[in-house]
Length: 243
Image (cartoon, rainbow, N blue to C red; front, side, top):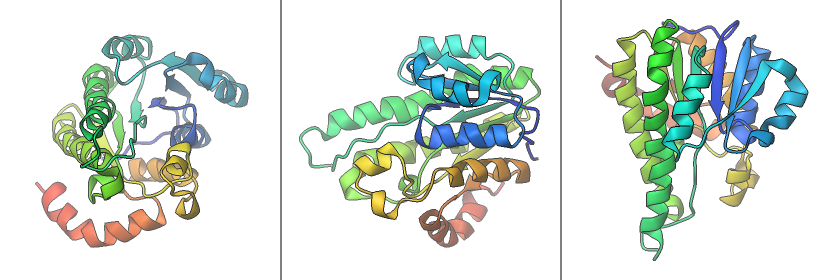
């Protein structure tokens, strides 16, 4: 199975900046007919509209607001590709007094948000021929970093849900891609103190286009991610991707 972006209609959550914006730009560069820029504040997508005109359609979507996701699925009912990129990171170790509250917030966005998007858009993708669903996970879904432990745990949970979606959505002909970036040059990466080792977000966008075309399930788009991939590949192929 492989998915060709050319001519497709896509939706990208968290499309206004960072990795999300880079994904939108790479999808358009690869020939996408239209991209819904799913954002919490509609006017935050104005720069994308200015750059790409009618190919970008802003739509309101907040991963913590189920009603906004349902409404977005009704508006973007012609999509063939959904990229759930939006996420939240709290710098919190397990012993911090606010660790539980931070973890609740990250779970609401990073895990429950993923589930809300999948539940709303799976029927749309099925109605439009199957298409593809992309989830932005992280190398933090595979290895915990103590300073961001609650974030890592939420991404591990999101990766687990993504594995279930791979199996379930295959039944309707929907390809699922799990993306695991390392440090990327975004506002989130800078806030986490990773600026000095971060790589450009376009690596994620172009990697998604290529991985979808190849029918891959995992994508490790940058240098640190690829190093982890080399160590994880045999387990992933035998256990995660195996029948």
